[in-house]
Length: 462
Ligand code: PAZ
Image (tube, rainbow, N blue to C red):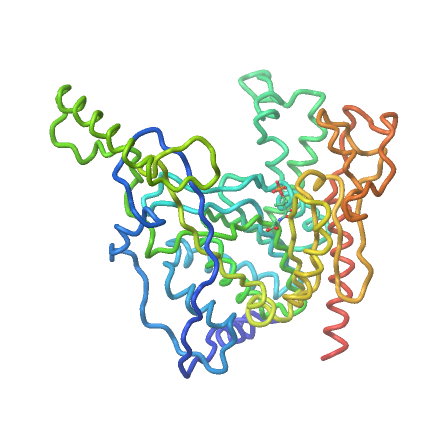
C-alpha cells in the first residue's frame, strides 16, 4: 500500500465516532495483598492504606468521557480506562517510530509482527519506589522475534524495559556475561574467544542484517499502564496492513493494578518516624514505647487473614488492587480487526491449561491461543485454534537438555489433564550439556503457516 494511502487509512481508522451516554458498571472484583512491615506506623482503618491520600488531585486524569453509541461493555471499559489513566510520556515518540516503521514495510508489502514480551510492573506509588512484578524474563518474546525475522517478517518488539532483547539475549544473562566470551588481542583490539567465535559471528551478522534493513523496531515499556496505551496505539497503526499484520502477545501482563485515584504520591512509609518532630534519644524511646503499647491494643482487634502469628494491622501493608480490564476483545474487534491475533495463556496447574486456553479462544474469538505451563514452557506448548484439534508442539526428546530439577519429566502431563501423558523420559535420552533446541524454532514456523492461511482466507473473502 502506498504511504499516502496508508496515512489516510490510518487517520480514518483512528477516530471512531462516539455518542449517547451509558454509565459504567461497578467493578466487581478486587485483589488484595498484604505484607508484614518491620515497624509500627499509623494504622489505617478500612482495607486500603491509600484511602486517606486518595484526594490528591495532581494526577492527570480526565473526567470528561466521550459518549458512546451502541456501546458494548468492552467499549465502555476501554473509554473509561483510557480516560481515567494518564498516557505515558513516551507515547507520542513511540507512536511516531511505529508509524514510520509500519509505513516502510506496508510499502514493501511485507508481513509485520508485533511481538510483546516480558512482564509488566504495577507501581504502588506515583514516585515509584515499590512495585509488584512477575517472573517473565522475555525469553519467549526475544527468541520468537529472532525466528520471525528469519522467516521474513518485520518485527516491532514491544518489551518490558531491561528484559531480554533479540540477539543480545545470547550474551546478557548473568551466567553468560559477554565479557567471558572475549579477550584482549593485539594492539588493544577485543577478540572473541575461539570456541565462541562462530556462534558470535552468526548472531552478530543476523543482528546487523536486521538493523541495516530496518526490520526490527524495539520499543520499551515498564508499567501495565504504559503497556496498554502503547499496545492500543500500535495495534491501531497496524490496521492498514490488513491480514499481513500479526499480533503475537507473549508478554506476561498483570491482571491487577492500583488505579490512579488510589495511588499515593510518595514512598509508602513503614514507620511513623516522618511524623516526629523531636528526634532526641529520649523522645524516640518514648515514641517506641507508645508504639508497642499501640501494638498491644491493636492485637485485640486485628483481623488476621491466614491464622499466621498475629501481626497488628498497624504493621501491615495492605494493597488493594483493581482488576485490569481485559482488552483482547477490543483488540480483536476494533483495534486490529483484520490482523491475525495470537495470545498466550500461562498456567501452573496442568489440569486446567487446555481448558483455560480453549475458554480464552471462545471468549475473545481470535485466531490462536498458545498455552504453556510455567514449568515446561521451554519444552512444550499447545496450539488451540478454531476448527482444529489441539496441537502439541514439543522439543524432541533427544534435544531436551537435562535439568537439575528434573522438570523435563513433566512434559506431556498437561496434555492428559494432569495424568502423565508421554512416557517418563529415559535418562539416556537426555543429552547433558548439548545445546537445547529452542522451542520457538518450532513455534514460529507453525504460526507462520496459520498466518499464511489467514491471509489467503482474507484475500478470498475480498
Ligand atoms: O518471558 P518468559 O520466556 O520467561 O515467559 C514466557 C511466558 C510464559 C510469559 C509466555 O510464554 C506467556 O505465556 N505469556 C502470557 C502469560 C499470560 O498472561 O497468561
